[in-house]
Image (cartoon, rainbow, N blue to C red):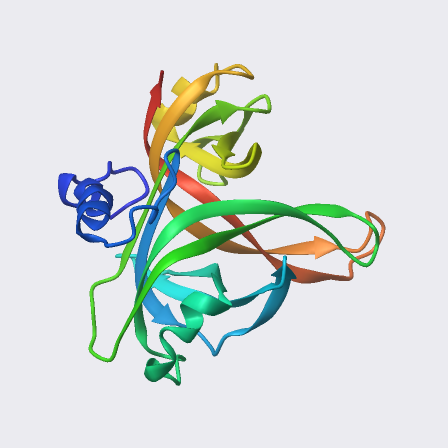
Length: 234
């Protein structure tokens, strides 16, 4: 599927059917739903601990129809991971994951703050046989920064949006999104506070960041964003 096509009816129904068939009634948040199917890149490693609960992380490789691969970071609780230990080793196995696309601020060694995005796992199934890749996000939130309008090197219009999505315990996730072509023109006029609902796909892209404006030295980093396919202003 190209970046310009809408989400198919089959894809849109994935989230609905997944929620109906799951024994976990909290598999998705009310305003934040994500489902992916792909290949686990590497074994899980320790991420962090919250209220004595440990969490682990890795990435899942999801291939687009174009052949480009997106590397989606995931975070899973120790309890949920332990329930799947019979599937070890995990690396290079197919996995289906449902949950929420979240964000949190991290501070690097230079005391600069960055928005880190990841898939918080609510349901996790591992398979030994090959499956079909899948990547779908639904968000219901509010524009929290003025849209940033631009063009690609090929002259394609793009608009970057930041959407605040409410979560439990009075928390919010701030999700970086991008629109293309006609949707870019439509969303370029949005204002902070506008209520929107979107369907899209998580994308990863590598970029080179210089250590300073004067220096040619730097390092490669990976940015994550939701490429919006359908967008509605509520």
